[in-house]
Structure formats: structure tokens, C-alpha cells
Length: 320
Image (cartoon, rainbow, N blue to C red):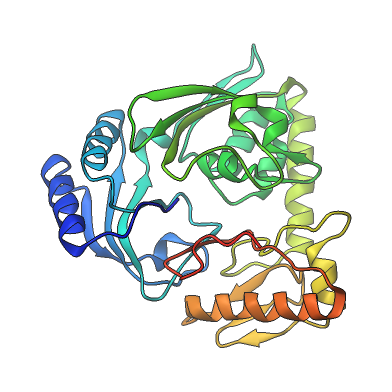
């Protein structure tokens, strides 16, 4: 999530100073972004704030309300994020600690999880408790917050199918709001969450089932993923699927498998996955996205839309 008006060096420095005063030991200046993303590349964040409790979150929001021009970026697990090699002139937010909690309620077949909870962990804990319907999350290497923002999905299911409600904080405006599934406005890889909305926690609903059967479905998804998707440094699907077709099929049909720019290559296993090699640059990723996008459009007339959240590039978060 990145947003805000053009920020001056002075206003950014003042905001970072205020964060250091309110959150001692939680703020890192010129923080490397590569280790925070699954592509493992990208330039530095002007500041990274590590938030691990509701009190930390309150202090963060107090500073950001007072400095509305400073851009913010919720990093999450970095699985759909590409930060420019020049970096991000704003405040990155990383959530951990209390925001990684997962509370399972087998009696009601519900799971409440913090924004930073890993989706595969959520899926396995729900399955172990005999809660079915959440197994698809095991194949998504993201967080609860990211799942809501992008309506993450796979294997015939999506977040919209299982979300009950979410607690959301507007970092510019104030109190935490409780939003229903309808108010979240989840569509295909999209939601109604604004650029300054931070998911605090969410409640998911499944159904009672035999834990052994849930575990079987988990194992099948993991097996399928290993067979059909590449490992290594990648961000999952690069493009959304166009209506009635699959981005991977179009990319493969246009002869793009194995196409390379610098240290980034279109996977031979799944054409909608781009794999970054050690030493690759964010600029290589974006250049390959543009190359594949142009080739597919030239050969098929279909313009593929990136799923990637582009930060620090002149395009911002491009959606077409």
C-alpha cells in the first residue's frame, strides 16, 4: 500500500524522527527491501517500522495522522510486491508479534487471525482442528492482510468465499472499523480497501469436517503446487487471468517461456511465474513484465494486467 502526495525530504525526516521518538528500537532508516520480498530484490525504504502490538499500532497511526503527506507501504510477506531499485521515499510498515496470531474455534468452524498471519499456517491449523474450506490458503505464500487486499485465491476458491469480517484501520483517519464481507467489496484480485487502510485482523468461516480429510486436501494442494509451479525467488502469478482464458496459457502460446531480461526469466514450468536469480534487479522484473505484456498483446490482442504491486516506479500500481 503506497500513497500520499509528493513528500519533501524535510517532512519525511520529521515523520521518521517522530516515529523513532514514539517507537524506540522499532524504526530502521534506509532499510533494505530485498529481504522483505519474495523476489529478493529492490531498493531501500527510507524507513521501516516494525509493529508488534496494538500499542505500537496506536503510536504509528498517531504519527501518520500528523504527517499526512508521507507515503506509507504495508510490506506484509512481500509476496506480490516489487520495489524499484531506487527505493521507496516513505515509511514501510512490517507487522509481526501479536498480528501473527491465529485463534481457532472448532465449535463454530471459524478462525480469527491477525493481519500478519501466514496463510499456509492458517490453512494447516484450521485443517488440524477439523475446519474445512480453508485448505486452499496453503498454496498462497502471503498474509491475511494481503489476502483481503487482493482477494487471494486458488484451487477453485477465493478469500471472498470464506471471509466473515475484518478489522481495518485507516492510517490517516482514526479508529479501527469492523467491516463485513460485503463492505470489503472483494472482486477478482481486488477489494474496496483504500491505499491507507491497514487490515488488523480477520475472521474466516469454514465448515466442520474430518481432520484427516482436511489433511488429505492440504497434501493434494501441496503436491499439485510442487508439480506445476516453480520454486525459487518469485511472486506467484505475474498477471491476472483475462476473462475466459489463462495468462499462463497465452504467455506460453506466444513463445515466452524461457524469455529472459537480466537476472529474471519466465519459468519453463509455469509461464505466468517469473523467477529472479540471485543478483537480479527490480528493473529486470519490470522490463520482463513489459516485454511479455507487449508480445502477448501484439500476437493475440489481449493486454495482460499485472497483479504485482509496483512501488517507486513512475507507473505506481499499474492495473492495465
